[in-house]
Length: 280
Image (cartoon, rainbow, N blue to C red):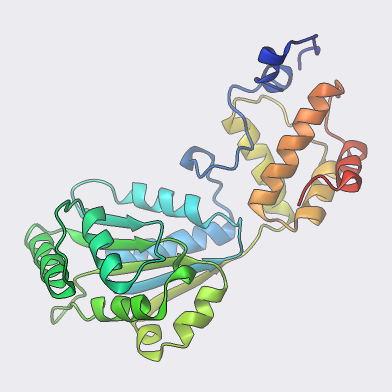
């Protein structure tokens, strides 16, 4: 750890990097696969989603609380399938009417001149899937924030899963969303039956919280763990193991620790942050 020195406003933009010995900010809340930590729950989720795509299972659903890492997991997931074997479309704003949704699907598959009618969209999508089969490619559609889908678009997704050959689905659809997604899918029985793979992503336990905080510091270039075990225990209790909340708490802890020239983040600093009520 370096001694804190007097800095001007421009130098403050680097905040604590030099002080704590980091190359990158370790607790940024962006879905960067570099910082993806494979907890036991994330590992199980990734395993099931990979299985759904490789075995052409038709539909799969991953739900989880806000901030539990669904989006970054989906980015890691799509990286596993990059290359010539998979044709992937990723929908990040699914709050669309059924026709618009189909047009967006085609656009995300790289088809820029999308038809204006639903029938033409479906024909074009079917042609794309058949062509992928000829080229020995799997067609994969991932829908993030799927709890925002309306009833007619859910119905469209159900109908898309009717695209089948005798021995396989032509399309694998992965729905990612917040916990209410599970109830919405359950309420559409015919869709629910077509979702062969389901998993609910849970927050970290204390052991994974500890490993996660250490892991992210190492990924950012840190040589030492800047947090005491007792501080991490208190952070876990306060954040309930939700990764996004852990990131916010750790980032603020390191910033304050830098400004007060702490040698390590301890429970006193953590309790001060909690009592300040500055987070959440």
